[in-house]
Length: 632
Ligand code: WTA
Image (cartoon, rainbow, N blue to C red):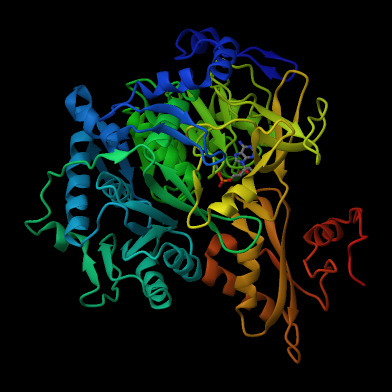
């Protein structure tokens, strides 16, 4: 079966339609927005609850919505415990391949054993319900075990992406005031050992709240362990306390499950707070419906668990749905550009979910690498993190999906918890559009006054309703949450401002254009200009700095920076290199600027705000727009 192509629309094949979990979109969509609570209650009913909710949606304190309030649940009860009662018990939960070729497999039963042991270790270290545990790990199974172990005992995890560096880690530990840090000696990337423990050690020096550091032995690095603070996980697991039985804590539906820091418009990253109840319902429903999950599926979300994509669609959604999850530690093109295609063939992966940056990066090596492999197991492909350019879309569809796999382009955010705009496998596709809102969501494009713009006109993307997967607040700063994301229309209805600009075409397809604020999407990673600028300014020779994102063929955006040096410091090529490395060391390699340009002044408003828009326009040789607020 092949998909037929008409103009720029790709229609699903009969085969795809015949086996779809949700055979039709429009009618169910209408039903879901007209009967939102009923729709979500029905989805929630597919999960295991210790106690059912009193109300599906509590709007009494909007925009601080509550979902399934009064219900008792634990996400781990759904992600693991429930599967132990049926045939899933011996089903593969996680297949992990290390970059060096090492393979480790865990059935749901085996996963449970690991998570229970880890949970008991955490308890022995005094971790209790409501405590925030920071996790800083490479992409190894223990990262997933650590997250689930926290959730199991009602502790809140705060995962910091393993590619971040000292300052990023320290500031996140500090904000959460974590007492316990879970890390590893190191990870592997391109055949090299990445020394995570030294970064963790430096971060712990900067953020003294950590009393206990649990370290996983993952490679042969000789790391510094501080007595009485640092413990090897394997030593702790050998103790009698670490039995492989541990009860799952009953949590309230609205109890926090995790905090995940994400970059915002200004200042430090914000800790977005997600809950046990609504998040379980939302991630599992979106995953089941949009990716048409079948019991026999092997699912590969090739993100890092350290970002929201990994939280929702490597760990929680797929495990709740009882899928088999592929996890790969290393670089996509190591040692050769066929590494991913080899993995798909070796393990018979049915669904691959990745970013446009990864697709563009692999496309660059040509068709012969994927063509060397049998990719016929693939049924669906997914995309996330940034708009996918039609060229990459077509390559993905034709060369990887062999013209038979619909591309599920999913638009969502750390804040939304799960997919907000995405097709179902049965949805006709237009390359570059994430198509239509997911069930229950009404999305509009509005102008600065909040009025809906006509079809095909650009405006601000908003969501006109609450949904179960939404972040409940910014950690320790509810006012900021309300102010940043929510406003009321003339009728007093609350609406969520996504921060992206978009267009809706005459068929109702949404085309996301990109961020409207100071957030950069670099290779699909979300970074804030503020963090990059503060990393630059922390260098002793820098007085002021500004960062902007400029279009980049592979990365989507690349970071360009403008630096004013301290008096008496001379600009040089060496200094520019040093500053780039400095940002990499402080923030992490992904934040390394593409370029550092030395300038004498920065365009600012009269109130002293850097006008990044002007810098960007100048760099691109475009019209600088309205300059009336520019200071002399
Ligand atoms: C962008 C990642 C276009 C968008 C899940 C959003 C996308 C930001 C898409 C959130 C997509 C994500 N098409 N743009 N399919 N998916 N984005 O929090 O700008 O890391 O606001 O969440 O990524 O990034 P975050």
